[in-house]
Image (cartoon, rainbow, N blue to C red; front, side, top):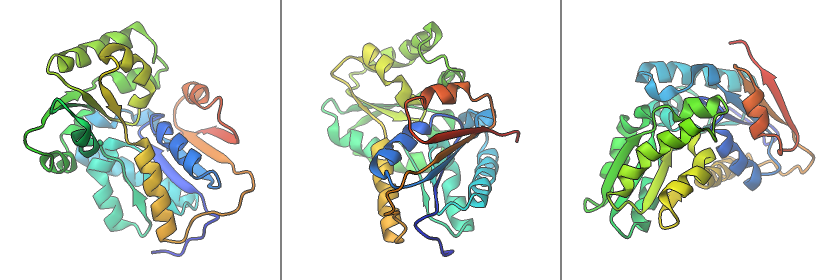
Length: 265
């Protein structure tokens, strides 16, 4: 591995602003770390793109973060992880932390032996997701639902819109009829919909996302490579976005030491 040092920032990229849900977990667990986040909102959602296109975009994002001197990169996008992280790990000499749907934790929690996963088409069709889901107890039913249109609404700042509620009901209510008691959020954008999802599925359904687990894995990787930053001085968190930054600014309005820059690529 290329020699890095603890003072360098953690790089994070996503197909848009959804990965900020992962960034918040990392920032909470590792408050001494400086971060650089790349929101490729212009190309969101990745879930409708081909595997080759997703790999190409992931390479572009990785090169950008490496040019910013990042010591490790978190692929805060389920679709990019499931389609591109194998390539990234093979071709770059830096630790990568990925994110994939928390199917296994859900399978251990279900009492009805029926779990649902709300994710993008790109994630559900990936080889990695197929491998992960095939390792689950065969008696457990997995209901797969493509969340078409959800990412676009979030990226446009329409989280609490009537259109969002209508879409969520159309996806979740049929899953509820099949006795689902665990719902896996298979896209980093979806944690921003938890409040509305709870209103639809009720209190008896466990909603599971991967944010905390990814933060813990990031910490473990930094410890393994002796890259944990122990310096407690105030850190700056820089967010780059290649689209209008208004929605990103709204999401981060309560976060401290944040700097947002708009890109043209």
